[in-house]
Image 1 (tube, rainbow, N blue to C red):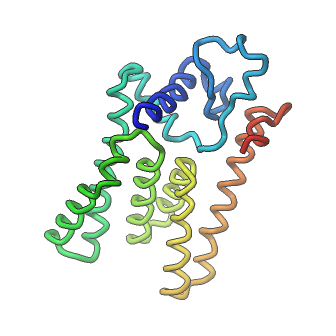
Image 2 (image 1 turned 60 degrees about the horizontal axis):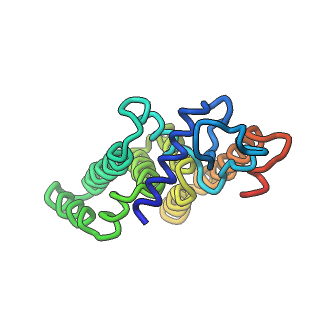
Length: 212
């Protein structure tokens, strides 16, 4: 499972480097090799089932360090470390340092967190941006919250849960319903942007939209 994911994500990242954003339009491309003329219609290989942000970030790391296995693993570990730091500061908003450290240590040894931190998947980068958004929300940094909401949603589909958490707390706890509805509306807008992104990648054949 780990090797399959590393190969898949690494392939997408290398395609961004080989073919450029001008051709891929920033959408995951599920082909192998440097040449696209081997495919009757390479646009049919555009892969819309995951948003592209983690793979784009990995392409940046490949550009810096080269397309190596350790680079693929490093990205997951860096995002996981970031998750632990964000979680510590998020807990620290309401509890003392000792409690925050214990809670963070428990998260670090949770088997699923440890496993997904070493597997190259989209969930850990998404969790990073969700936690960053929650920390921004706890400080009422609305601009940062919107930014992290967008980044979470463009990392993977669970990123859309961030708006649900904010909506529930603002609406049912603080009774600020007008403000609360902004964030589900932003979810709809972000998904609309993603659909436009898919359309722009293949406006003639609409292959990514048809495969979604």
